[in-house]
Amino acid sequence: MIYIVILIGILAFWQLIKVYEYATIINGSKEETVSESDTRFNAKMMMVFCVAFFVFCIWNFWMYQDKLLPHAGSENGEDLDLLFNFNMVIIGFVFFVVNAVLFYFASKYYYRKDNKATFFAHSSKLEMIWTIVPAIVLTVIIIYGLKVWNHITAPINEKESIQMELYAQQFAWTARYGGKDNVLGKTNYRLIADNNPLALVAEDPNAGDDKLVKGEFHIPIGKMVQFKLRSRDVIHSAFMPHFRAQMNCVPGMETEMHFVPKYTTAQMREMTKNPKFNYILLCNKICGAAHYNMQMDIIVESKEDYNKWLATKKTFSESLTAEPVATTEPAKEEMKKDTAITATVEEVKVEEKK
Ligand SMILES: [Cu+2]
Image (cartoon, rainbow, N blue to C red; front, side, top):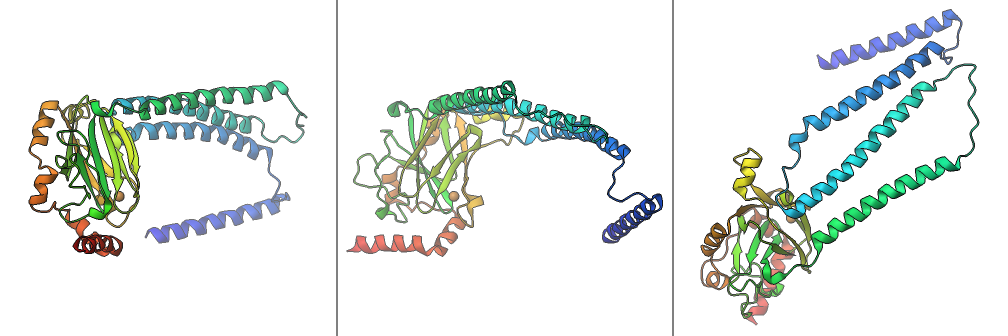
């Protein structure tokens, strides 16, 4: 039915064009000549379109505002949101002014037969205005942006912060805590094994008390958390949208980011009026077949609850004697497919035997 309606619509339109063609022949005018009433109509339509376009843009913003991220969960995130909104206000202002002027002039100076355009070669004053004003605005935006960026990435006191690692692999995250000494133990990729997926050096005195966590990790409110990021295989990206934090995990090197969580999960549930709200860690690089599955829940809670939760987790040295840390099933399946990884694990085993 829909196809038939569309087909009939096209046929009707075609017939209309033919009627118009014959009418112009009967009138004795050429098909190309556009009457002044036509251009006047177009000029009016320019303004109608301009208004409709603005209304549509505003309506869009209004309709989809609930699809935006909720209030930022970290201090850095709040700074970034302020920067973002500042930019959006400037961009929005320019957008409305430029488009309004564009359509207004297109409408005002429509073609009239006996009108002649003014010859206007140059105006230094105009040139100065449209060069200096954007230059000042851009300078302000860049200086403000750099200030926020420098603040967010400034070195922190590592001893005062919680030392954590987010380890990425196809297709799962492992979170590691520095343990009692709050120092992350050394790693060596050659040591990757079933009971040592993060390749910790067991002889390193800082490694034994490290705690490995999967599925969900906790952080306390109001305390600086420093994340060290590593990847086993390809580039992943640790993305925590509610904290406005993201950093690539690059194989063969360690990257870093940090922030202070400002609201607990419970507080955020109240603020968003969503009892199911959870902070989340996602992979934000298309890293393979099960990329979508690469996520971890993050719980922000009081220091006491955080300590209680962490106390229930096994240390690395405890886990060495216990069962191997279970990887999620899809991750295991995908890893079997990836011959490169299997080869590395196999090689390490052979070397260990030697
Ligand atoms: Cu990934």
